[in-house]
Image (tube, rainbow, N blue to C red; front, side, top):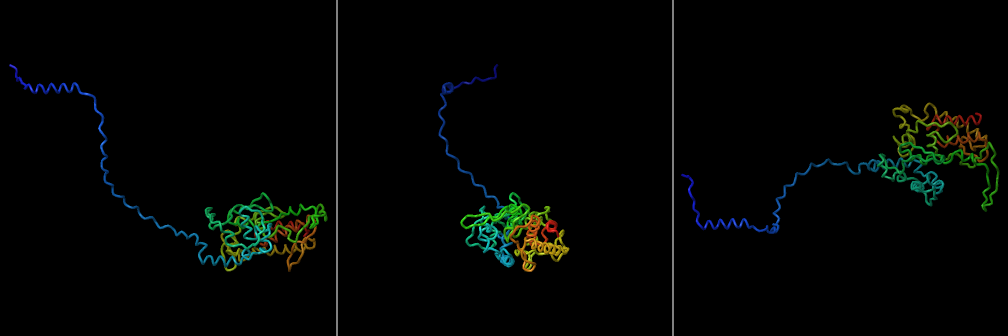
Length: 367
């Protein structure tokens, strides 16, 4: 016999099952999506992180300024500067207002030059002050230790197209301390005319071949041709670059200072030469009697130039150019003498070159 039992379903259950099968077989299409539910609540904000460690204290903002602008330093600088020709305003009243001279003889004229202006007349010229040289503090970005209004290579006045570069702050000094005229200016004078106030100029005389006309009692390279001489140029003779050109102006004329020399007096201090590799034990600038020999030779040349009619004066009151015509040889000696005299170092700036200029002068004068 079979082990399965026969199960009997109640008629009602049979009806329910039939209805379910009918509903599944006849299900309609899916209805539209219901509306989007509301956003959930925001989660809790996390706790803030710990603060970073406190940084080190920076340098005082005015520390660099105090290198110059402390009361003590400014007093020292002002006292020293009062001893210099710049502060004294040498020739400011005479040349500081004249257009051809103001560039270097007045603070206002130099400022005009820095701004790209040509030589202009200055109504009320004044001597140089701190701001004449140091007003451009943005130059400190060029790794300079002090602010300078100018540090670029020097454009020669007497030799257009020539530049000199000390590659240090001495370029500011050299911008003015250079020759204003070269010897070619005088060699080019071939005639002299009268200067009639009505404009009716007439020929006074002709400068002949083999002659040169000294046209002024201020003839020569002009005052302070030190840049030219340091670079071995300016006079008649073989060019020779001075060892001192690598030092420039400030190393000897500023640097170590005492009551009257160095610093902003600009008077050279022998202490600045007593450094390793230079003149370590010297006590004066007459090293190996070079200045003494220089002065002796210059005196002999000057007397010969007086005889030639190129100079006037004497050893006591000094010599100055004499207006007149001289030979080419006499003029070469005259011009070299004026370069050496106006340099004012008595042979120190460029001993080798100065010896050449002296020798050329002596040869041309038959000494």
